Image (cartoon, rainbow, N blue to C red; front, side, top):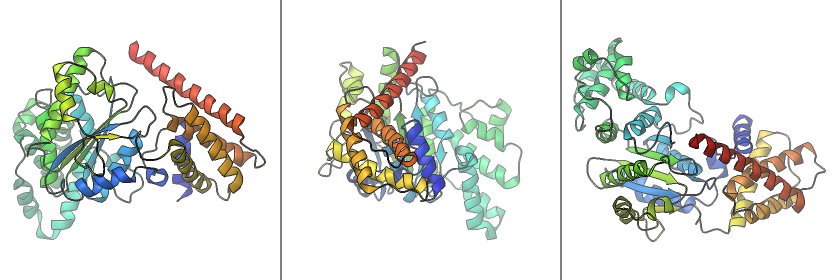
Length: 425
């Protein structure tokens, strides 16, 4: 591993305790059974052949949801899928407003980035996606001339929304001709308003709003499949402690949207689509007694396991490993990344083993806090590594480990309280 990537991982984990966007495969522990099922049962064949599926990912705050979704993203890229990772939030992207979810999906859409290691700003989103599609086809068909490219684009069919179909086709042709309207068409694809004359000129008759958002999401999936990708993987992450909606009315609307999205995965209008929706607490969906929740509960029955790969729910708290063993393996992997970040430093193995063991035991003992013990451990172990590097004679005994963990826990809980206060006011 290059020191630059290793240091980026260490700085991110030590600073916020959240996973970096790239490099999570170097410190993944306990997820292989789930990842193997998703790859072997879904991404390798079923989804690629035009099927669709929905999975609910459950993990408490700091319990590894985002890490898991990033690993799914990497596997999907290796299989030739387009991916969009969307962090849901109460203000910018609540799930009860699908038009905002559509906008976020387009803003984070990425073509397969296998082996790139990092994403340039202009590669993310529908703009980078369109330009990459255009360049790939120029390279593939370039010798046959512009007329062949035009014929190829015009022949694309099977897209539900004619407005969406016209927008992606005309954006391609605008890139081909060097036309000045590309940015305006792109604006509509992003979910923004454009002038009526431009819409009329290119056959874009619809607006992107709550009445059309589902249709445009379906059209996005249909287009991606039609232009040669294996399919589309959507990763929706309720990254905060609660769901991305506050009032009862908004919650019911969001749950109804979720129910409809699950139902869409059971029909032919979402070809080659796999959706993951990550939440911190399944009780937020499954314990309410209103009709919409009952309908949703029926659709979310069954845990995904090796003997039941059709199960919908993936519980990241149930990895088939003892929690202390999980933390120890995680600590060992992080120690390797740390050494790669700070060459030529290397740990004394006996001291390292003792340090990881103490931090793991104390972090697990503090597991009843609002913050997941895994995140507390990660922040704590990075702090311990810094202590050992700066003072090789240091030993991290149990009391020092407890102080480190409690300091990190207090910091994270203060951040949570600040977040809650901002949401309230």
